[in-house]
Image (tube, rainbow, N blue to C red; front, side):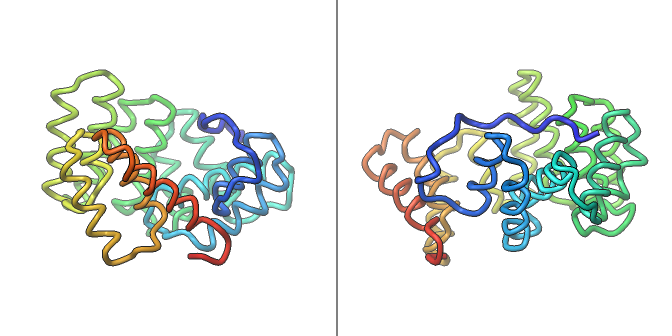
Length: 239
C-alpha cells in the first residue's frame, strides 16, 4: 500500500550543505526510513504549504511512516488511503483523503486538482483529465490546471499542445516561473527570478533556478555563482 517513491538523482555526500528536505531525501535514497521520517517532519513544518516541494515532502513523510511501521497519524492515513484509491483507479474516493493531507476543503477544486496530479504520477491520464475537469468546473481560475495539461502533453511528446497549455497557464498565472522554464522562455524566467531575489535575497530556491537558467543561457560564470549561493544559503541558520 505504500507505493513506489519517485525517482531521484544519485546520492551526494552527507557533508554537502543542504536543507532539511534535501537531507531527508538523501536518507530516503539510502533506505534509512526512520531518519528520513524524522527529517521530513521538520521539512513539512517549515515549507510553504502551497508549494510542490511541500506536497512531495508530505507524500514521502507519510510513505516513510508506512515503511517504518511507525505509529499512524492523520498524514499517514490520508496518504495511504489516497494512494490506495489512486492505484486502484478510484479517484473519486481519493479526493477527500488528499484534501485532509494537504489541508484543503473536502471536495474542493484544489483537492480535485491534487488528485489529478497524483493520477498523472501513476500514468492514469484519463482519470487525471476527469479530475482536472471537475477542478476547473468548481473554480475556473484555479492555478496550475493548464500546467497539468502541459505536463501530460510533454509526456506524450505533443510539443505544440504543451506550448499552448503552458502559455495559457502563464496568462492566468504570470508569476508561475516553472511554466516559463518549461517553455524554454529563458529570458522571461530570468527576469522574474531576478525580481524575486530583489525582494527575497535569501531565497535559495530562486538562486538555484536562476543558476540553472543562466547555465542554459551559457552565462556560465554567473550561473555557477548563483548555484554556489544557493548551496551556501542552505546551511543551517542562514535562512
